[in-house]
Image (cartoon, rainbow, N blue to C red; front, side, top):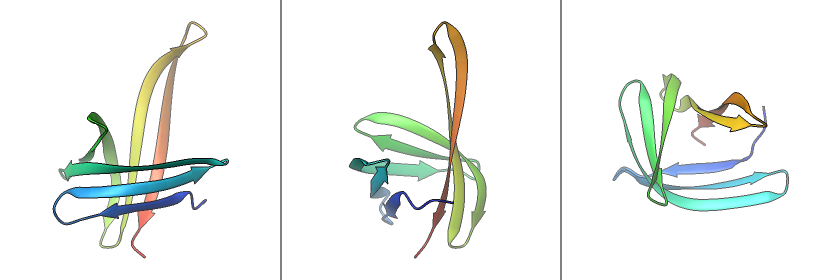
Length: 86
């Protein structure tokens, strides 16, 4: 497991994240809402809906799946995040 950064969730439904992956830095604010099955992030007015895989008191595992075409092939990619309260 790798530590690529941090997500901060505020009680008012806002938050921010900071990520560093292979030398690429990304930081942004977001708003969020959730159900028992999904968590929805709005980043730069763009919605991203993650499936909640597992949710415990101080730990959540979420996954984002997207489909796209690459070299005339249909590709599906799933990225899983394991977030823990520190």
